Length: 121
Image (cartoon, rainbow, N blue to C red; front, side, top):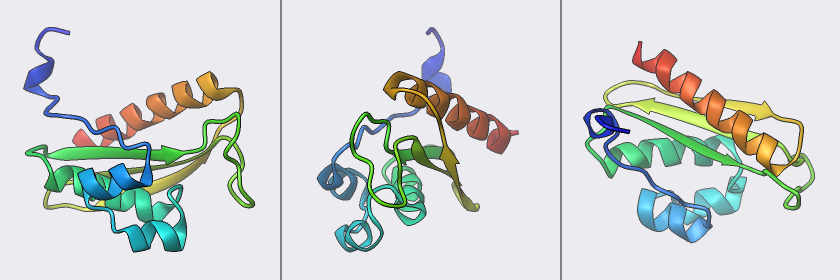
């Protein structure tokens, strides 16, 4: 979309735990202690995205879109969103979505963009 570079500085795709550690500086010990799908890791991802960019605002998503990957206490559809403002607070929210992989992903993107718009206002 023309003009996107005026507001979108960069993005990170960190599916693996190794990528979360290497690209965003999420401590491996934090992932080991809480799991990749956790409030602590989502917050660390958002804060790491700010450290690795010049952005004013970052959002991070970690979750289980399915069809596999569920673990006790974290069923398919479990998503943690975190958003961080440079020189501001980091917030996080646990969401539980229904549906197949595509539905979980779509709902996640919608909620992540809504949180960014609210935080930017």
